[in-house]
Image (cartoon, rainbow, N blue to C red; front, side, top):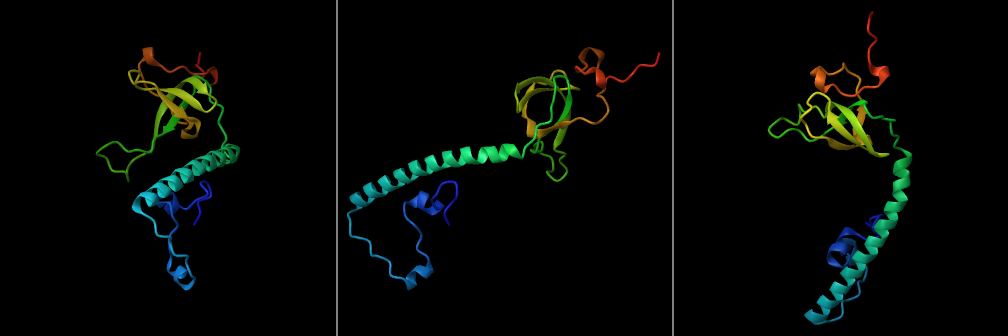
Amino acid sequence: MTHTSTGFTPHYLWTGRELHLPVDLSYSIPSPDQTTPQTFATKLRKVVRSTHNAAGVTLGNASRHQKPHFDRHTTSTAFRIGDLVMHYYLIPILGTSAKLHHPWRGPFAMLDVLAPTSFLLRNAICVESPPITAFFSKLKPYGGRLPVCPADSLPVLHTDQIPPVAI
């Protein structure tokens, strides 16, 4: 079956020829012409090289075609510097059970907006942790209680996130 993004079957990309299936026995298949191993290898190398070049061009076109469709269905939450977010990290810690792994880590404080889709984060509880870069689809707003941390390491918060003080 031809792959829609490459335009070729995986077997053809790998071997330079199509598969012969049992149904092909009922139809006459042209017999291959007798060639020397050197000419066969040269021809095969040429076919595989041209196939890979054509597949690369087709993959580039498919990528340009598929990106707008993907972007149309992804929406970014408007995160601002100082927002508290949770980061989706699917890989469990080494030695722990994947079944019991909770993929949402955080809270993280938003340090910088690197691009419209990528952000620089810092752990809001542990100041010594290095900043990490995260893609917007791996983030969600933090909806829990504010983290308990020392006064000198409080995350930067917006004024609407600071609870009112009773006077």
